Image (tube, rainbow, N blue to C red):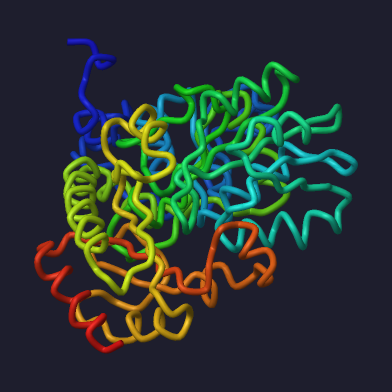
Length: 397
């Protein structure tokens, strides 16, 4: 059987063709900061990119290369690069693809730190960002101009799980200018559920801290794209600008987590659907956001582009606003009050005061993030225990 016909988990386990020189089953941790050259001529050839091989662990090491090969295969890309965090992946990519005087069109609903980077920092370097409702085709078309270099989105969006049609967005951008890079943050889905490159996106970024690693014990990021783009990010955004390359220890752990990604995502999705259906029946909940619910505004698009699964994230608005939402978040016992997501443990947080605190009150309203919204990362516990935990927390209101 050709490896092109292998299933997802087979590729997650056997995706890299690299082998350790001593026959180790698992790619070892290469904790060397630098690598030996056979001669000055070889060193010069590697620095000139005329000969493959390792130079310095800020841009590559065998442990990381093996992980990069696997992640590229799972996302359907030619190549990938691993980074120290999700924000490392995003910033290294943006700095590589944008210059002063150029512009970005971004969805108005983004992870708080991504929004802060776009809104409050890129402008200091002469980059203009237009925040739009990406699901509105007319807004997207109106925002594009001859200075646009990047169209940036998350789907499902953090934290309200808004769904954007990746294929339609990419087509509009590329019809306007094929050189525009459509960048999609795929953190909430993982490549098991959604593969934006197959839908027309040019670059995929992840906080691999989340589902890709899945164990809440490290920080990591990844960028997947065509080989030329990844090479540019490695040599510009990583080597020269951010230095945000993943250490070998983290690469080893992420590769270990990947092997159970399919199994974990199935459980996350199953549990999340049960939690979402329970929340629909709770009279203290104003609205539930979960793409798997038929009444979700983006359900039909999600069904088309999310591989028949809808992820492990559920958000909901508690009646009574911020004060009542805080009571629920403060009184869970099985769930843990903490930011992040995608771990085995169920996590609960209040976006308006935590992950999305960089937004002003007006910006939160425009982005569809009300004060009473709770973001719930449904873990791998028994679903009955998660639901009972929510019931006793709601009872405190």
